[in-house]
Structure formats: C-alpha cells, structure tokens
Length: 424
Ligand code: LLP
Image 1: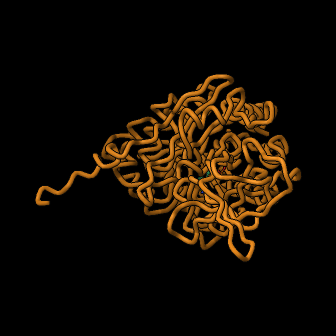
Image 2: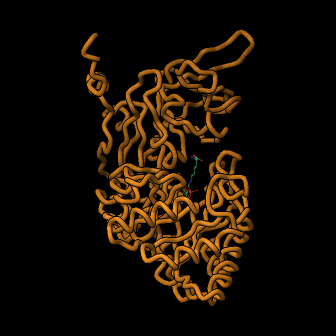
C-alpha cells in the first residue's frame, strides 16, 4: 500500500501535486512519502509487538542500503526504528539521522579494521560476523581498544532465495555468512575470547522473496543451531532474521502479508526465549518512493516500434538494467485515447538503458510527466553521474508539505570535486 494517488486526475504524493513538484524541482527526481514509510514501519512494529511473548522487544533495523537519505532515516528513527548498516558511512548516516548506537547493527562481508574500530567506538548494538578471518580481526581490533563488543555470527543456511539470481545471498556458493557446519566451532571460539561477546546468530538469505517457505526454512535452521549451541553450553539470546520480504511491484495480491511473515517467525521461534531482530529494506521503503521523470520525445520507427525517451536514465534507476526489474510506469496525468505500446528508454548511451520493452500505456507525448512506482528502495542509492548527469535529487513529502532532502548538484559543484592536476 502507498500514498501516491490521483487527485482531480493528476497523481499526487499524499497532498502534494507531482506536477507542481516537477515544476519547482525539475526532473528526474525521487519523491518519498512519509505516510507510506510510517505505515509500513507501523505494520511491522504492530505485528512484532503482537508476538512480544516470543520475539521479545524485537528490533526493527531498517537496511540503510535500501534508502540512505538522511531525512528518510530521520523519519524512521523518530518512529523508533533502528538501522542495519554495512559501512562506516552508513553507521555515520544512521547516527546523524538520530538512530541511537544501541539500535544499529553492523553487517557486511568485508568490514575493514578501521570500520570495526569505528563501530566499536560508536557503541553499535551488535556486529554481525561473516567469517572466521573477520572474527580474528575483530578480536584484535577490540583487544587494542580494551573492548568486548556484542556480536552475532551470520550463518549461511544454504537456502538461496530471491527475486533474481543477482540478489540471492543464502546459497552455499554465495559469499555471505559462515557455512553452517563451521558455525558452532566459530561461536565457541568467540565465546572463549574476552574481546568479543557472542549474543546470537544472524541470517539473510536474499531479497524480494515472495513466499514464506524459504524464509521459514532459514529460521528453522537458526532455531536448530540455537539449540545445538545451547547444548554445548553457549549463550544465544538474540536471533537476527535479516530482511528479504518482497513487495508487489506488479500489483500482485498474493504476497505474504507483514502479519503473516511475523506470525511465521514467531511460530518458528516459539519457546526459544530470544530477542528477535528484523532487517527490512525494501519492505519499508520500496513503495514509499517514485521516480518522477519527463518524456523528452517519442521516437517512432518505420516498423511501428515506439520509443518513449525519458529524462531519467539507468544512472538514476539501475534496477531494470541490473536485475531486469519491473517498475510500473504511471503517467501523472494520463491522456485520453487507446493504449499504446512503448519501449521505455533513458537518454544514456548504453543499450541496457531500457526500463521496459513493449509496455502498454495511455498515449504519451513529449513533455508528459511519468512516475516509476516502487522506486523508494535501491533507487537513489544506486544512482550515479554516468554520462555527466547531475546526481538525481530527492524530495520528501509529508501531508501537504515537501522538502528537497537531497539537492541536484549544479555543474560547478560537480566540477569542484575534480581539481585539475597542478601540472595541467
Ligand atoms: N540485511 C542484509 C544483511 C542485507 O544484505 C540486505 C540486503 C537486507 C538486510 C535488506 O534486504 P531487503 O529487506 O531489502 O530485501 N539492490 C537489490 C537488492 C539487494 C539487497 C542486498 N541486501 C535490488 O535492487 O533488488
């Protein structure tokens, strides 16, 4: 569900006209809805609280990689949301947005010593360890600081899942997590060190997962490992269940609901007496954002193929080029007339700069505004200045008010970051 709806025929973000916004800020631009972020967080919070007896005071840690905008993070932080981070930059963003250190989880497959030290000093809640060598490095870094940070071991349950091969992380050949068979020895080694405090296990098997079965299999594996570790006398008090639940990019109605997902998790963890954590990214942010763009021109070929050339390109929204991802395209003020089939393309000089082939739409003309739906997660964060296009700006809407929360850089600003070498 989201809060981008038509008022008097034109698409709005909550109470704000996208036509007016495009006029004021220009296009392309990402537009986020506070009400949608709030609703999604609220549904997850409510579901987790309903299962408090099993899940404890569950942490909801937004995966910052999905949308790292400081105002988006601050919106979630004010609701009590934590942050799942994978770099010093993300930890810094979460802290700056008002997420307390004790709600920040530090994950990631390649944390540098400097990042580990930063995370310890920032007092993060938990560092998720992904390999034996990383554990050794953390022990060394923590020893040097006289610290003993709380850690979880991220296991790889060998349950691969996700909307595309490129976003699956839990398979045995994926680079993520500690192989299941190695986890007990590693956990025991961590427990024996005075410089780390192992508190639990973590997993994350993939993204855009549209059925509960693989998630349930992974959670069951975590349960089994918890019992195994406890039988060895080790303490396991937290389970980090990762993110991964999919969203209805195609308007599907058969996706598991947030309530079903959490009920499933509670069913699996029943009786374990652990505190759970969820790390949703897409679930909270995807439908809370659109990418607003303008049609530059319609190129019509002799063979009947029609290209709608947009002012947004793959540098602004990478998902279709990277993962063949589907984003619905909605004209902001649809024209009357029979549906027409377009190839939706950007202006970038790359043949992958195609958002969709043969997409039916109401008739489009040069100058029309269109919105890519479901673009609030893994949209702006993946944008670049390829083809020397200024980085796409971001706007946050809240009811009738809006603010530019990331400005479009001017060309001088872009060039200032590139001092010309002194000898030129
Ligand atoms: N936790 C960890 C450890 C993760 O690696 C991820 C995402 C998440 C949580 C959040 O997953 P989500 O709830 O958003 O599925 N760029 C790709 C998605 C990459 C996901 C990477 N990891 C896309 O646009 O589809």
